[in-house]
Image (cartoon, rainbow, N blue to C red; front, side, top):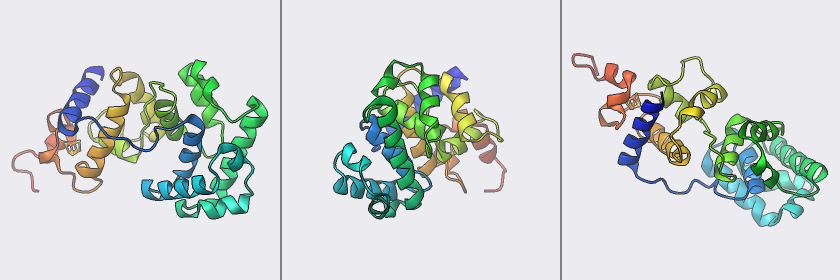
Length: 225
Ligand code: SF4
């Protein structure tokens, strides 16, 4: 697995180069809010909801003091506004109560597993979103797995067919090459969007074809297209 992960990482970097920013390169508490907003929606709607929230509540203390109904209005573009507003206010209130302020910096001194457990104890924060925060805001070697990465890594035979997002993340994380967590995460998502699509993956154009059992089967000579 480690050798295959290195090869996959290298092939993706050769095709896609260094990925650009993804929006999660922000402070830990802003990222916590962003990850709650990202549940069950796409990046564009998440970003619209976050921009609207920041316009109305430019600082975290002002956000924490928001009325739930007004916050719901501000984040409606991201869907599930009532549940997300409640999750955001509850998370901020808990931080204030437990830590005396709106900070997650104390996580930096914890082991990765403990920091992840703490984050997933918040409503609306699953393993995927906790890993995004840990990786992008706190620099942990966490490996977030979304639906694109799950599909691609199943086709590559790196995780079992039955694996869900969290299980795949735990299986893959120890084998990600050092310092490749961010580029591998972003390049696998890009591959899933552009080539390894849910239906009719474009295997002949894929840089991972030499390392992919599914792609090799699909492109075997004599196989109907
Ligand atoms: S070769 Fe095909 S199935 Fe394999 S990763 Fe590439 S696009 Fe996906």
